[in-house]
Length: 126
Image 1 (cartoon, rainbow, N blue to C red):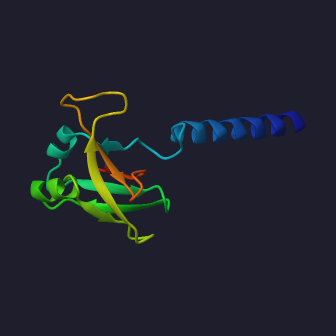
Image 2: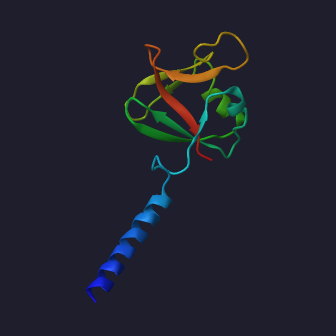
Image 3: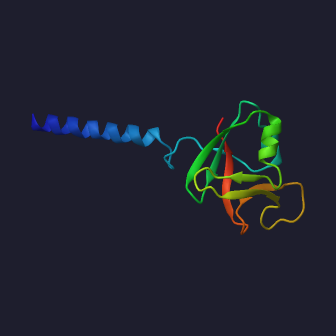
């Protein structure tokens, strides 16, 4: 009787841990977000797209509903200013060549503070 109880308890615990281990991926947050950092990513955004604005300074996110293609291009335009709703700081959108590469068509979008440090990024939610 004692062996049956311990066997049942062990099997229950194994099933519990296995189901929780399989439910979440390794980084424990669900599926990865598609980061918007190229011109081709911006062009794919449509009126039903939702963007996630992640502020590294305040560790907050803001969800932005894209109204239309024009709205998406305005958000990601060179020199556009974005305000974090939590820390109330303004950040600037810049397009630059990836580190170590000069020239070429592959520009990357970065959202930086006044010192030029990367502080935010945009990702596509759906």
